[in-house]
Image 1 (cartoon, rainbow, N blue to C red):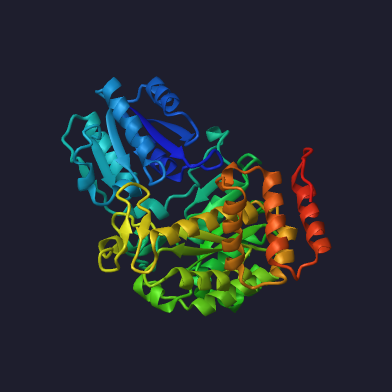
Image 2: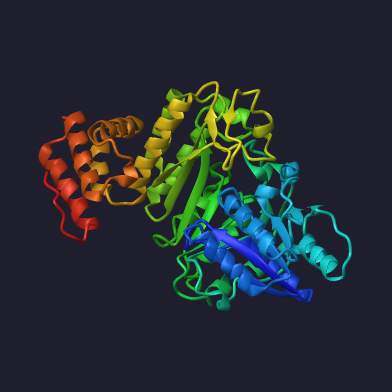
Length: 480
């Protein structure tokens, strides 16, 4: 029996770990397994053509909030064209509140939870004509962290340049907005297996840019993380690595090891979410925000590690003004401040408590919060505009000299982006993504010149010209 596992990724640079985790146990059970990976930029009709061409008996869809609408459309059309094909859904988007899918007649089975064993059992039942339930509540796959291997193979390529690796499964924390809070316990790969796995990545093509550990809290326990980081300091590990870590778990040994890394070899991402203690308590995030900020700032000061810091807008007890305080406290201690917006995911405690906090959210994916007791829809819209600005100005790296010039004169980072957002609307009126790069430079120059009069025009022009020449490769009509 032939089984097709379908992934639709966020972009061409991403890969899907889930379908690769399913491939190996299915093959061991004797099934022919084919992987099909596409991304959201691909036309749905073309993806459907590719699915039909494989002529699989069972098609499994790896489903998340960012791709579920595409997956539902593909599966529905597939069932119309090839009604004998068994369609299986899995992934976090379909694992909770499954009554939502009662009317989705094109889905033959939904696997909730870890799918490695459940998918094998389901396919064996289908092959042998045995009955099976439509909703399958999978038990944790005990062998998942005992298996060696990275699940990626040379024959998978060309593939995305970001690969994912799971050295542990589960999370020790119970944050009310996160699906990891719905499961308990953490399981780990042994350090011996992990070392062998990381060496397997060295055999893959050179176009791989980063290995992203998907561990929810990589440095729990901290002693294990320190041993892994010490291992990665060795010259035989040449890839770049990304970790999500908890700042409060770092110890002095962690700092000593991290300071030794060559520049750019690792990235660290810290979930701050808010600096408001009342907010953090409400979402069961038991961290000390001041301690987190000091730890993140210390790592940034090393100058060798790219540091990401996350905030979430729309959490309980955080007004627009209070969020601006969190923003201003977080911005200077990291290389990249990532502004996210609360999504009330099915299965999370905060979704169940939405009425308690006066949180209004969209019924449609990705379940964005529309307003709260403390934050209006208009204010969320303003924060969204600021997020677009930050993505254009900060994440691109194309305005580094100009921003450094401004931030030498102000510590109100939020006020800078808020004011620039208003200035762009007044002086251009287009959505930011519609504005050309030369016009962004012009708007930025005009705004800074108008608002920050203490900055000399010569210094500002020097920074603007430096950034423009560094990032633009074609002639432009820019005039300052």
